[in-house]
Length: 127
Image 1 (tube, helix red, strand yellow):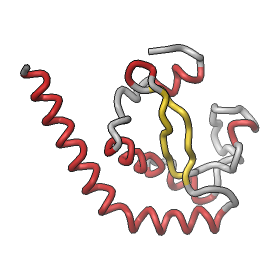
Image 2: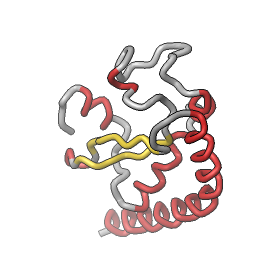
Image 3: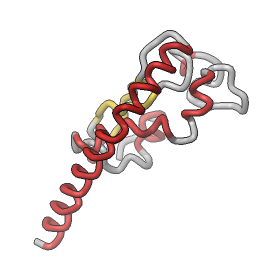
Image 4: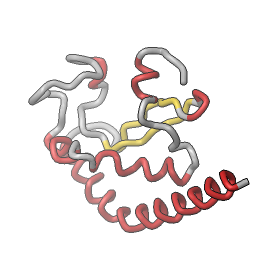
């Protein structure tokens, strides 16, 4: 019973904080989106399938920091120092700013247990 209450309170906290964050960051996302579009061809967001709780697959959103189809070039999903696939704007976004759109996932309840999902998908493992 306490676990359900704690989970419910945590969920409310997550939704409220992510909502406030999205409202505050929206103008910044627009500006960054314009810079991404001016810097290179392709979408503003990079969308990638990831696995969440119980192996449920969902789409994760990040600001695009690399050229389109970068995972099919060079080292694939690995990144090397001074990687030529990283865009000029992407160099600055890779400090963690590119991850901010994941607040959308928090609002959609899909952002759960993401610490290891990427590795698991890359190795075709399940949670």
